Each structure stands twice: as C-alpha cells, then as structure tokens.
Image (cartoon, rainbow, N blue to C red; front, side, top):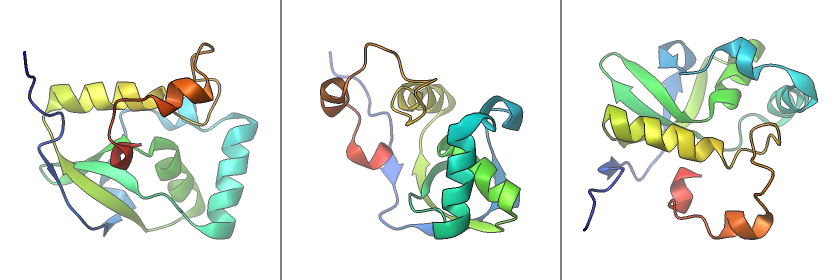
Length: 130
C-alpha cells in the first residue's frame, strides 16, 4: 500500500523569517541546558546559524519542524531573523516529522543508545529534512 508523502511542498530556496513569528513545540527550559547547549550558543554567536531551520507556516506564525535548539539560541542572542526552509504538511505529519527528526539530533541525550553512525546513514527521511 502506497502512503501519501509526508511533505507535500518544499520551497527550493531559503527565506528570512522573523524570530518573533516562530513557535516551537518545546519549551526553552527543556532544551536550553547542559554543556552542548552552551557550545551551540557559542557557535551561533561566533558563526551564526549555519543550518537553516525547517518551518511550517500555520496561519500568521511558523512552527518549527527542525531547529528548535537553533531557534532558542537565536532568541538568547537577540538575533531578529533566521534563514529557513518552509514546507507544507498537515498537523499529523508535522508531529511525525518532529518525532523522527529528534532521533537524529546531535545531542546524545536525545539519541537512542542503539543508534550508530551506520544506523543514521540508513535513515529513510530525505536529506533536506535532516
């Protein structure tokens, strides 16, 4: 049985999105802690956000699909706009994407212990979503 695609539309370019218009499904306190968080903030301060966020437009705001930590780092540093790729998908598929992408985060606290580099290289999600 063939299933519908998770993402129905992806823009081929990045755009600037005001941080004030972006909403994360996570709370800042659940993400903004630990040594890796401090390293991320220091990196964003020094180099900017290298990897654009993946967002979904819902009404007047954008919801984060990938890049929750980068968003909170931008907020902490007072960055007003971030680069983003905007995708179109429904609520259910967006929730599935967020869940799946969290498995591939660089933060080992979120990465299942059985995951290895080989496991990550066999991922089934498209590269542009990771």
